[in-house]
Image (tube, rainbow, N blue to C red):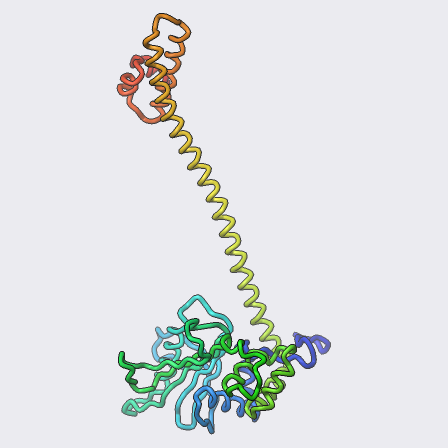
Length: 344
């Protein structure tokens, strides 16, 4: 619990970050005229069509069968003509295929809106995702609209509509004269920098140019007065930071472990290779020396002893390499008994 003197709001004028999904939802679903006006204006801007009435729906549609997974929408909206929208903010890109996720979410939304006996006249459904990351880096447009089409471009029914609004592509417009911005670009800059006090003057100029943005700013101001909204936002950002730190530490440990294991493996392989090369070189040199000493046998007793020692060394190396006694006998000239006694 918070005390009267405790606050999670950084300053009396600080605004919630609308790129946080909880704050985004709070701004658009507060039960105020400003929130309703902002929601209608944003949807109208994205869809490029007038929106008169919207109804915020339960954000967790019921599952149809027990094996289905439950889905939760950030802001679930229904038009007066029955069309449905799932509007959500995506702060970070996950490891899964976000395009597939959007399609599945949208299919569920359309399915829950379908009624038996309506002869497949179910109103269209829209998945509008505001992304704080780039979904398609090859496309410079901030708004991408996907529908089902044939190879030649022909549409199917326009029932399924996936829309991505990429805020990262909007960032390059920061500082552009307000009068030269489109309404969609103004919304993108508002969502990107509304909480950034360094850009207050510029963003306020954008807000004053659009009635819908004035409603959005007013709604954001209202929900920013609520301590619980700051608790939710701070908790979400803290969880993201912890997750990022955990991933960073995990990657660091994995790299360190990989380096250590690589060093150990390299040393082991180096030793084994050195031993192998040493054995081969020793056998080669031993054979040569043994031959030379054999020719001089009887002339120098010291050389004889050296030859015998060389044969024994060769035999030990050969034994360690797994050669049979018969092969070592042929190789060194030592007797079977000598080799057996040595191996004991």
